Amino acid sequence: MTVLLLKLGLVPLLIAAVTAAGRRWGAGMAGFLAGLPLIVGPLLARVAWEQGADYAAHAALGALAAVPASIGFAFAYAWAAQRTRWAQAELVALVAWALLGTLVLAWQPELPLATLLALAAVLALPSCFPSGQEATRASGHAPPLAGRMLAGALLTLAVTLSAAVLDARISGLLSLFPVMMSVMAIATQRHDGASFAARLLQGMVRGMISVVAFCGVLAALLPTMAAVPAFGLATAAALATHGLRAGLGRRRS
Figure 1 (tube, rainbow, N blue to C red):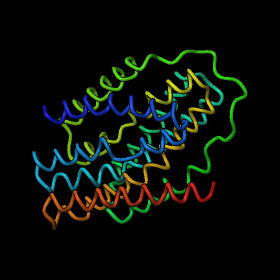
Figure 2 (cartoon, rainbow, N blue to C red; figure 1 turned 90 degrees about the vertical axis):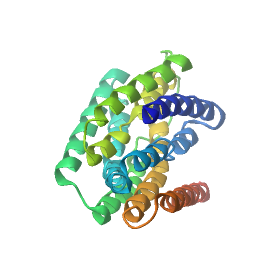
Figure 3 (cartoon, rainbow, N blue to C red; figure 1 turned 120 degrees about the horizontal axis):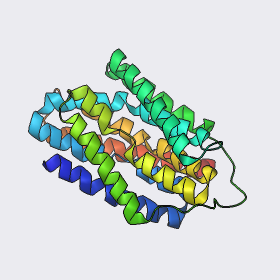
Figure 4 (cartoon, rainbow, N blue to C red; figure 1 turned 135 degrees about the vertical axis):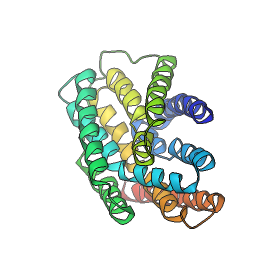
């Protein structure tokens, strides 16, 4: 129950924060900030407390292996949105996530390969997103912020209740279900158009380098280290990689 309440509280607050960041710094920066492991981190910490370090290590590995599936969702939505409305783009993206997630569960890569695949997806795919800006804003209206927060909470509730009866790897996969990506991409496409939505999702994918670092370090350390220092080192790795990626992005621009 504590984990569920944590997720139900975090996701709407993060949606509100990302919305405010988008208004202040633009879609790309908002997406980049949303890529931090602010949801999966506290959830894995609570899992370690309730289920033990071994279960949390397997869940962290499942989340790490699921990174390409989440990126596949963002990539599919960004391209589909260039030609379709938000509902069709969301459907295409969910199909892509389901296919990649099923592949991950069937394959079950171990830590070195899961890390390599996640890093390859995070580093290579952002350059393949649609580029350019639309000349005019979309004519539709985004759902109000309260509606987006409620949608995020309801999606989180559905995913969490499903994960509660499944094993550690599936729980890890579902912990990275693209709740925020879905809500924010739909709202951005409806309000600002497909190109702005693509920039938001591209930023999220860039920011997921910190998720790779956090889950990878956690999956590696939890089997042999106490939970508190393991989570501390994982958090430090996430912040360091996020800062490094941000610095490299500013240097290139």
